[in-house]
Length: 215
Image 1 (cartoon, rainbow, N blue to C red):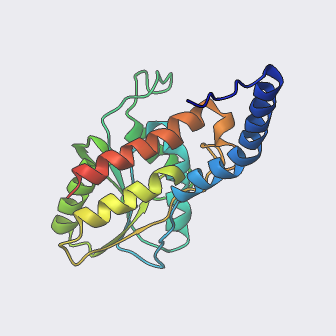
Image 2 (cartoon, rainbow, N blue to C red):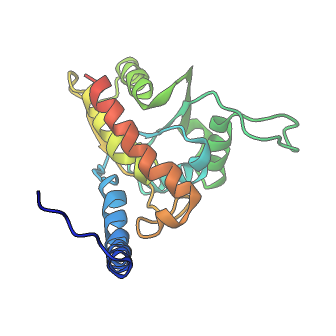
């Protein structure tokens, strides 16, 4: 039997150094590509409604982006969903407001009239449930097209889920996410932020779960 020669300590150190160097060189572009893959844009020039998906950590950037689309004439209605989560204590309101209330207030602050904002008060649990309830809402309201506003890293899973749920309807679904780097880290540096690790790897795990769950 041929004996495998033992590696010396200098050889082991050299291999570790080469491996570390390769990791340092390859990790940043690989991390950027992984984050960038999650972001998709399929906007519409005009739709019946702009739908802002719930997101307590990023409600402000979503509301502001939806207002930009509204003010650009992309739709005359903004629809907020309700994840039934409360924010921290508000001294002004003397209570813990719901995040959908804060999102509505942000829309008003940046110029969207109250009459053009509607909140779906039925609580949602996750993106799939959100898509189901919005499909029913569109049927009741006679809406034929919607453009979804969400955060950048949520956009691929959101669009895939909505198009699956809406696939047997004649309704059009587009997506116009918020640019990464506002309330979420940029694709180039997400791995340097704790919030980034909570967004990108978890989003891939959720995508795998949705792949098996959503029919």
